[in-house]
Structure formats: C-alpha cells, structure tokens
Length: 103
Image (cartoon, rainbow, N blue to C red; front, side, top):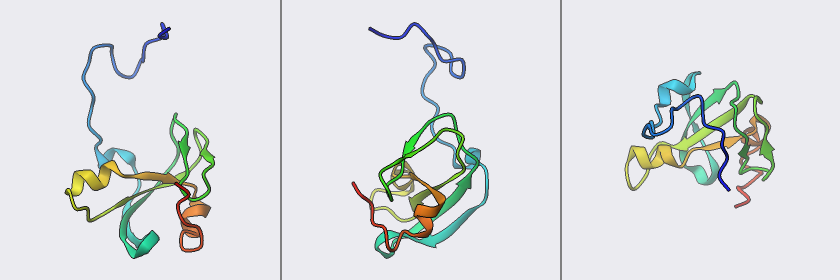
C-alpha cells in the first residue's frame, strides 16, 4: 500500500528535476580512481538520504560528510558519467587502491 505522506520538497505531480552538479556544493577536483580511471570528486556535508558505499558495502548514514565521485570520461557522454556517481565514505575513498568496489 502506498504511503499517504507526500514529499514537501517536490509537489505531487511535478516532474523530475535533473541533477545539477553545482548544487552539490564543494569544489570538484580530479583524482585517479579505481582501475586508473579519472574521476571528478566532490566532498559533501551530508544529505537526507543514506547511500551504499562501494568501498565497504556499508551504508553512508544520512547527514554524514562523505565523498561523491563519478567518471569524467564515459563512452556515452558526460551525463552518463554523472549518472554513475557513487557516494563513498571519505576513508574508503582514500583507501580506494586497496579497497576495490564490492559490487
């Protein structure tokens, strides 16, 4: 049964708002990621959602500062790379060479 609660952030019936990378906050920098691929990396203060960290397969709790990383070059274009962004614990991102994605 669907929840009777409606989102206060997006009125019911409004369309999906595409991701704006500038809205994430913080400075974007370029770093080498898993497999030697170049990633755009941004530190964020936290959010209202929980995310699964690909480094340790544990949840990044809501409100926890963490790292968002996405490939800068993608076969299907920049938007496809942005769609593949992942939320990492800061420590897991720092240990990314020793800690491969679990999924």
